[in-house]
Amino acid sequence: MFNPFEQKPMSIENGFMDWKTVYPKPYSKSDVDPYTKIRIILMNGIEVEAAIFSHQFHRNCDNNELRRELASTRRVEQLQQKHVNWLKPIDETPLETTIGYEHVAVDLTAWLAQNEPDPYVKDTLDFALLEDFDHLYRYANLLDLDENIPSHNLVKKYVEFTPGRPTIAEHRHPFDTVRRFVDFSTADVQTKLNILTITAGEQQTMNFYMNIGNTYYNDLGRQLYQEIAMIEEEHVTQYGSLLDPNTTWLENLLLHEYNECYLYYSFYEDEQDPNVKSVWEMHLHQEIAHLHKAAELLARYENKQWKQVVPGPFPKLLQFHDTREYLRKILGEQIELTADREELKNVNALSDKHTFFVYQQQVNHDVNAVPSHMVIMEHQKLKGEDYRAEVKENPVEGLRNRKIDNVTIARTKQKEPAGV
Image (cartoon, rainbow, N blue to C red; front, side, top):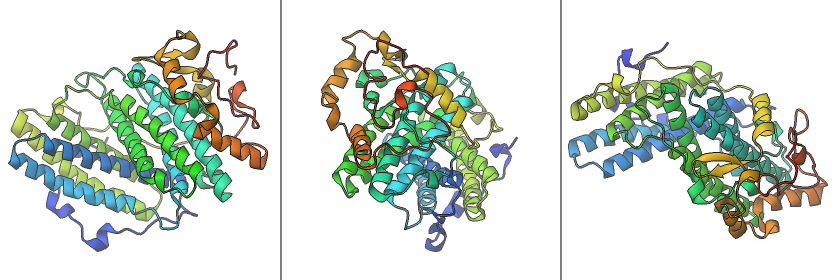
């Protein structure tokens, strides 16, 4: 297995790019493979996280020599972010890009859950998986409603469009969005990488919606972005709380660089587009240099060796693939779950005074004013039913009616189980 510590690193300064290099050839939105597109979206989020983390480290460090080292690698990380993000073509609309963001969330989360050794972390991934899946469905209905574009043409049947845990049911009290942190001193490296990856990915989705949502050209779309951006905030809180707060800044730096090497190598191995593959290869070499520098800084300032934080060889490489059957299984089994502080529970098992119901009443007391519900109602009103692209009917009986949007399942106590 590939070991980045065995590679000879280039100099960090050789990672500085001129303007011709940093401005890439964009993909064709009509021809791009959906997995190429979601790799690009994810790596943009990974590079944004690298830059944000480095800035926070910089602001919490009193050693200017160390801060100069951080500034040098951060400059390359920023160039990498521009190089990756500008692969998006001019003619791809923000809403079309949004379908890609939610496709990332679904297939990435499903892959991570299927390859997660820690049961608590796996449960957390499965829980949010059903929510991002519903976001995909809501945005797809908006795209079909406003632009008459069927989203299944964008994803080439790699993912389904059908309701997940309804977005209206995802609004939870902040106290119930905080999970237990994982002890990174004993955790499997796959768990560490999975948490770092999903936190960065969800953070980028949150940031994208926070910044792009108010630019949508009608009120209904603006409202949908606003609502789902709030759920993404819950997800970032949830995933971020899994990170070990006892990890030092320099250990975290090493983890970030190791994760970037792992992802670039994973995607280089799997990429079919020659142009994008060359980007992954370039960035992999740059990140190997950053990783070696992080190991050097860890040894210099904390007298620790990189082997105390990560192993050399990578674990199983991240490879996007069809996760539809896995998602159907989780949807059928976990539709009615919600959060109770650090645990997940069936909504029917909560007390009537639980914070979930209190918060729901405060935020969603007028059901018909909830944007995610309004989008479906509007689509049903104008086109007779919602927009879906299913392999077979929804695994949850209560979500099969295409003419009525279910706003009670997973949100209120049911006399009968949801049913599969």
